[in-house]
Image 1 (cartoon, rainbow, N blue to C red):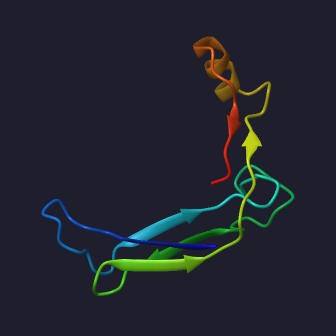
Image 2: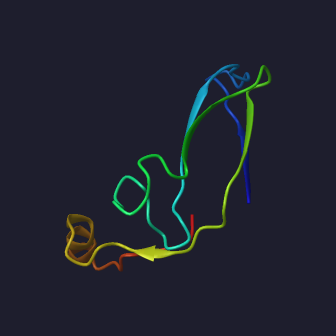
Length: 89
């Protein structure tokens, strides 16, 4: 999968050399920050835009996942009457 975009300032002009943080879940829907089974920065990168403000990075196709059922995010979602399932992203 290719992720690409353009960073613009408040006037709509491209921003050269902007830093874009990419956090990507693995094929099980887990982020390395929360999953001790992955290396510390697995599927996480900081990339710099080009002179035209554009960036492009290739990664894997992630899968959907659910919030941990006993975690604070799911507790909040329960109170809001919402499920904790997340689409692939």
